[in-house]
Length: 584
Image (cartoon, rainbow, N blue to C red; front, top):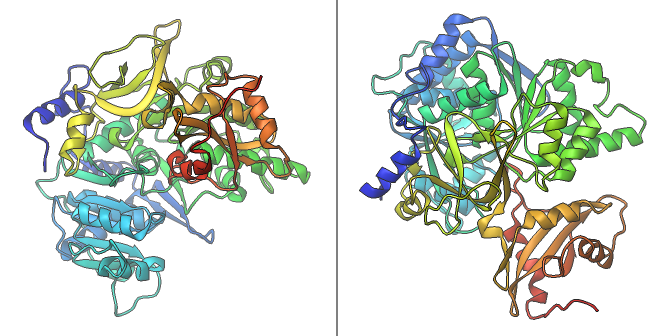
């Protein structure tokens, strides 16, 4: 089930950065445990982790305290029979104990397989089985669900590879080993095994595609460290700065940007159970946070909260927070989901806080590019607003980016030409776990093929600024002519009263696919289908314009805020046999 020799050669080429092979490391650390130990020796009393639980209770750990807890957890893992190279699964959420467990796995040289609790039981069971994890750590709220999944009581569930379930949080009982209780019994001294290295597998995360079985992305400790190095260098993040995590840490964004990156530079992180509009700015002010990593959905929530606050005559930042309380705050990192020009403009105008838009995938560890930090306000706004799509920026070290013909034949395209965004560098994954066909296709010509369509433009200095125009599989193929949903969505979002507007390719017997619009209106808006269709026709050709509008109140999204357009196609089934004609 591992890649064949040719695919392995292609993967090696895709993991090479400017002719520097992947084993010629760009970081000075032997592994993640070495980095944590270095930071602990340098600044034992410096606060590394501040964690808020669901009730707002605050806990903090200095580097020395955090390292000691990680050592105890690593000893516990060994006592449970976990060894270097094993996999440990979690059914958990953002919590200090979760972070401690993650780093304990990496100290031991074990890999994490974090589960997304928002997925259905059958999918979680599949990823547990596929991961070959030996132990499952479960937050107490999910214990009954975990038992149901592991027992196979529900169709498609069962994971016989799990040897032990460990309870995290809640009151201890006789049913499960209790993580907190067992931790207190362990030594706070631990040495990483000799075989632990930068090549030790660190994460097995599963893609959140809407069709087919999830693919397990294998990332090494080097992947995590080298991408954190690239992020911190590009963003100018240093040890005297503090990042805040509001994204789920079962995903690479939350893990790499706001856990590994602060550790890499010797900084601090403020971990939130989840994003909450009413505490977001308060915690940034109180904890003197410099940077937050978000997805576009959260920018939308910030804008809506500010509108509601303003309507009540209160501060847009929340009770007791003034703009001067945020003088230390630098910028938002924003990626993972689809950022529209309209939302970028709205947020920056409303808050006067820069967005450093970026792009990356789990398969490239996390981020691969960002807008440059040295852009003036006018330059940044031009790259966000002047080209039909917000630019995702320029490639960061340790990767390169290029546009190739979407046919997969390895033909590289030039400036302004649309094709598939491809990446190669040291942050490219080891491979997809047990998916030889996917590996062969994804690394077909020695680059990682993202599946995203895009293009690049150059600035006066010759830098390549990339743009994403949609998922290739989500392009609307109307009678052989392909349209990007992003083009149509920019028009939908420009219509006053439209809160969310998605262009959906739905099945049609006359053209194969037709263009539909799924719309969520702003509160109080009273737009009709005809008004929306006319507004689109004023800016788009008939062929490219939506033919049908379906109004809804919710949109399916992944946990990182990406809209799942394919899940909305069934809403347009009634128009499968309708031939739409332009009105004279």
